[in-house]
Image (cartoon, rainbow, N blue to C red; front, side, top):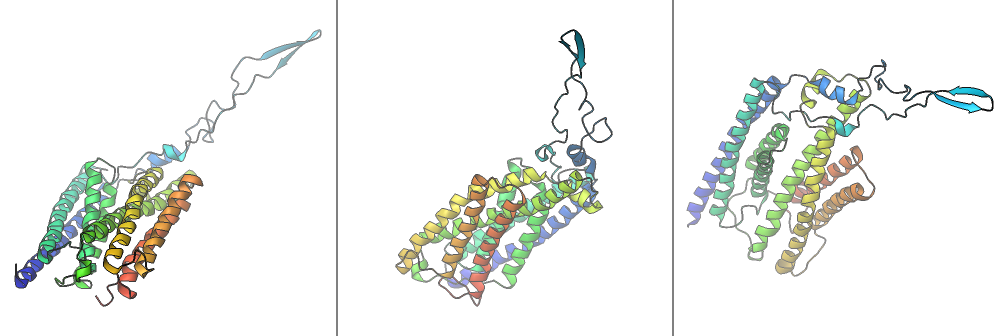
Length: 368
């Protein structure tokens, strides 16, 4: 294959990315329509789970504090004394937060809203196929793994994120709510890739033409994309948790919060979803760093040289390790653990954008 043919094929791959962006934009509109037409406030559903429906006028158990047995008669000497009936010690009738039901996950509300949701998913699938095709065509055009520079990494990264979302849908997970933030991010990522980060079909220097490019960088893309999905779930958890707390305290959320947040999974479900993703991906991220060290020894003659990207990869690893350790040993749940997870993902973003664009090093792409 000649260089001219490679360039033409790469241009065709870029055209496929542009086409995928157009279809993603249509999916974005469909997701918006789903939330608008499907947003019939179900605030009473969560409110009923967070407040008791007792008969004492104060939300308590109607039987709480009532006598639970007959009066007790005690004879002392020649007299008889009637004692009060023993009281029943009851638990609080307010259910725990883990009993709050999940919302429809942006998968219902009414027939019209669900129709737009199905259209949005169909468009997302079509856009993903075009997107994946563009990544594959780029790989054929350059004759290597299609993630050797920031343009290629960005297009592959967003494709894996969409694949993860669709995979959760196939597994019948309640993740339709992920569609809108995911497609929005994918459009931003691809827009940045084709305008600012685009690189022609350049080839790698000989030391970097290695099978480890497929292994090390490929795993980094998978880990980053899944960490991103976990981060979105974590941010959603923070909003939903505040919403549930306001309801539990007797407050009245705004109309927007009621119509949007009520349709999402419960805060407990979102917290578990994010945790399971991060916990499952963390071993892969560990191996990604190890694979990078092995590749560095083959290419540069040393396993670790404190290059900026190596340092920030380690910082990211420490961030997620702290998050998982805090949950496993300190019993952290909820907002404190969420802040740790978000901080860890911010480290990943610094490692990708900050180091690659603004820091000189063996891994950087300054000047792209």
